[in-house]
Image (cartoon, rainbow, N blue to C red; front, side):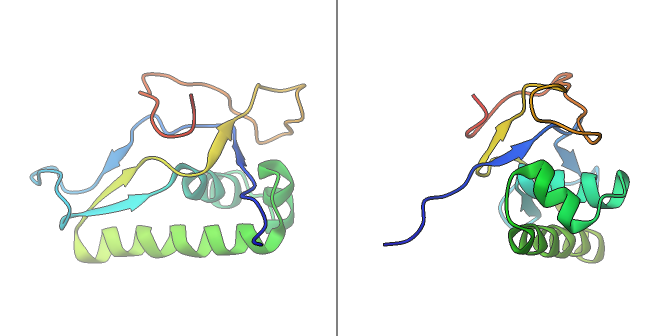
Length: 122
């Protein structure tokens, strides 16, 4: 029997969930879909300067899980840039944190400005 899915803790949702060429409509072929937990791994490691170990602790998953999430996120960013596709950030297996003091550390940026919730974040 497989292990149950472990929810990834996310402290910061993107202020915009769509990036890429401005003259394209959103459809299946012109889009790359990034999950919210992939976005969080990019934010923590590349923007906040976390190690993969620190990122894993912040997201409440194993380091090897973060390594896979991070690799997939970088591949999607590269695909969007190189192939000129729209990058959409949506969905995934995550839960929003409850802010600093509730198990969150230095990378917590709890804010939800203008984000329309979807997926498992309700």
